[in-house]
Length: 492
Image (tube, rainbow, N blue to C red):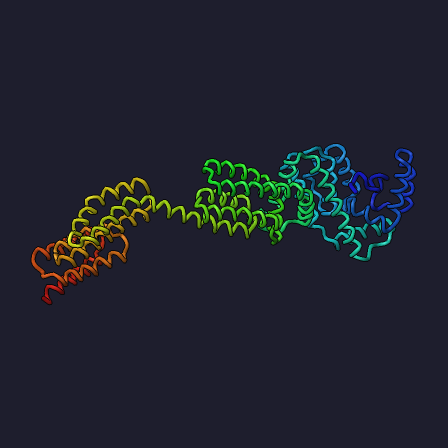
């Protein structure tokens, strides 16, 4: 019951008019309006139980003069009532709901503002305060007071149904896309995008919306499943990545259409601490295809595309968002490792050939090491031009360093030419960037120096090695190496 359909408005009565006054007004208004309507209004206002519904849907706590002004605005400029200062929440809610039904179609953003204002006002209604307010007017008008709070609470629920109808009426004036947009803005604003519980009328709005949207969502779900089957078939028969990406493009459109309609439901269920079963079901189906694309077909980029779609579409569904974030991170690491492997192929090839040759011909392992030394610097320069990743560049340096060390050890063990072995190790340390590798080099230097007679040339090589440690900003290792050298000299 809106303000303009209220018996008080029909008879131009106030909440403080007594039974006799109401009957007189009914007779007078019967000369201008439909007599049956006036008689029904009179019956409602003079029957204590029926009267309560009219009182609740009118302007309790508002003076007759202020009520006349509100009704005048409702007729002439209902939109101005959005900013009206009405201290009594049930009256404020009644005014907003009645004004909303008098408005033409609004932009989605403005519809959302009205709905939120109605929901917030209704949320603040206090049943006990309302009962006292109604009884104050009844004392004056001579009608029996309301003693049971449950009666007031029951009428509040009736008003809640009327407010839902008013909201539905304005939404029905919108196009389908504008309606979805209005509901989405309403829910996201009222719940802070699902971070807090919204007013009860917002929950009611979404529940009704979900029923209406169900047919569309089910149809689009079937379209999503059909396109996923098409994608799997295309992968299995070996279609090109271009053809597969075209299918994913179409799939993305359908998924986003589904999400556009499902968004307010997802946000609302999140705000209530619940999960959205339909989103979880569809996300699981899509995710399984993304996993299959990588695990069984090595289609990393396509799998990443679908993972990105899942993250975007199901961001409001907590369990899905967490799972898809984990998937995206895992796929990103796989992509990084693949990129790293591709960039390091030339260095891997050079060092693998050197190690293979050193394994077969250990007495010539020094030549394998020299070949690595001659090519290593340019390969590192090339690598630096292809990537800014310090980790990848460091790994390239460590591969070279480790290879040189291994070649030096094989050569030394085979020929006992420890002086030349130290020269190779001296270069190896300049490439080492990993602490454990540097320690390994130092440990092997200790072994080598224990296997050599310390002639001037050997001591010179060791000193050069220690100098390189200092130049590489590794003073601690240089000091340790120097201590080893001094111990050997004095223990000789």
